[in-house]
Every structure is written in C-alpha cells, then in structure tokens.
Image 1 (tube, rainbow, N blue to C red):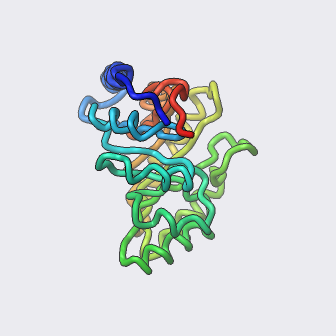
Image 2: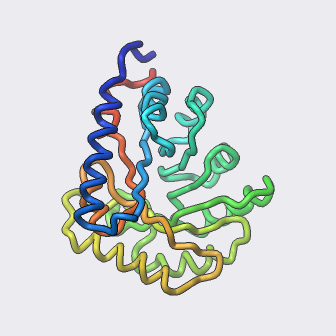
Length: 234
C-alpha cells in the first residue's frame, strides 16, 4: 500500500515539466504546435496517478498488462495508451480499455490487434515502434524495415496507424533524433491509405526537451513527474 499523504511534489513536478515544454516549444518549434504529456505509470500507485490527473494530465502510459489490470479500476477518468512490449496473447486483456497501442513492432502483433478490434466492433489507434538505435535490448522494428511494416499494416481494416514511437539510446546525438523526424516527415508525405502520420512519440524524463527540438509532439514522462519510484504498490 502507498502511504497516505500530500502529493504536492506531483504538482510541482508537473508545473516544472510544463514550463520546460513551453520553453522548448518557444525555442525550437512553431508556437502553435501542441506537445502532449503522457504520464508513465509503471510502479506508481493509483493515488499518485490520480494526483497527476488532477493537475491536468489527460494521458496515461502503461507498460505491463498485469500491472495495468490491477490498477485501472482505481484511476480517475483518463485516456490510457499501452506503451510497453506487448505479447499477442495479452492483447485481448486491453483491447477495450486503452485508446492507443504505441508499441506495434510486427505484423503478427498488428494482425492480432486488428482481429480483436474487429471482434469488438472498433478501430484501434496504433503507433509503429521504431528501434531507432538498433539496440538489441529494445523492441521495435528497425528503421530500414519500418516502411514495409507500415505498408502491410495499413491494409488491415481495424487498426489506424497514427504515427511513430521510439526510445533513442541514452545520450544519443542530435543526428539520431533528426533522422527519426526525417523519417516521420517522409512517411507523412507518402500519404499511405489508412495512415495518418500525426503523432511522433519520442522523449522521456531525460531527453524530452531535445525530442521536442526534433519534432516530438508526445513526450512520455515518468521519473520527472512521479519521482524515482519512491512509491511502489505491493
């Protein structure tokens, strides 16, 4: 159980993140561009997540199916994106309770999401996860294979590809971020049917300002918002 107490630290952290995002937008992008904050809730107790929702958070990011299922009924109303590696046999548990799956990295997974979305009479929004640093420890399709995956997945009727998601390597050079943004824009220009390249989900607690510099319009923040996992549900 989490200790009952004052969660003012969430308010302070949220305000600091918003301030930094505003500055990054002013410095690097069109002032009219919108950057959304997705609160990464891995290991964070529902009471603290709800404090973030009270601050103005409208998007939650879940990494683990089992953990999400144990907490979702305690959350205040909020859109939830699944952002972790997703096994095909777990899709059925989240198909009706998340608004987007950001971590699609194979046709096998795309087909299963499509099958279950059709069964449940819905269209699921998804992002294609790109392993932009070609790291063996991370999931995601390689940059060279991403276009082929997007073309194939775009033929499925019950998923809608809304953009790309990536986790650049720690301390990545600007060139890594720039190459992903270039890829994003290139795909946008191709006008592939059933693909709406409008979301670039890049940037976490350690690099969200740099990610905004290179076109990210959705940043996934955990530690900077909730702290270094001080409050863990057991």
